[in-house]
Length: 294
Image (cartoon, rainbow, N blue to C red):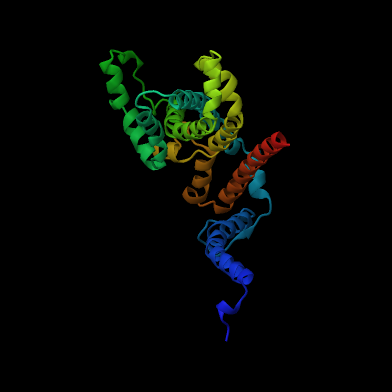
């Protein structure tokens, strides 16, 4: 009869490691790799997602996406979020730098800045839905300040709605950028600051010659993550406008194709293209960082 205790220590260790890995591997295959394989297969079919009949159409779904402008033109909406991330990163870096120094109440302000990132995307969507609605929080605030002439249809005007949504995204994700910058800044040895202060370096000089060169790679990482985030925006515009008024992103268009218009094969092909774009962005990120390590 097999007895685990009779195995050598080395074999016991291997068995225990394999048993611990078994559950996460099964979950990973079941909920990630198997659906991914199915998505790739469905992208070559014309299928409504429910019928038992699937028609193999080869690359037609991919050809349709690349030849019909309406599918790729939605990437223009991602530019608003990309520009928003360029505003978000300097703000996060500014707050992280300020709060890395000894100032009163800095832990409170750290919590205030990071808190929005803890909120669910759906909750953020509803918060800003009430914030931007007519006679909502923003309009009331502008009226109280005597700026009634600035009141707009923040999510009803196609000319400004994407700016409003990008602003919501900045509010939500500034906490993540802030946390990564703050962690990197706090990893800089304090004796470097002390030596700089002895040499008469002010806060700006410390930021320019100590902080920024030390966290340059974290800035680059945030830049790449911002590109990937801008491409895959979904929750906030879907909750607030459901893609109306020119706010439809590529992910919203993919979900609509699959579940609203029952074009499951086309939606799968769009999801594959989005995955390839994100993978390319990740490879570029790895190439840049690997090159810097050499």
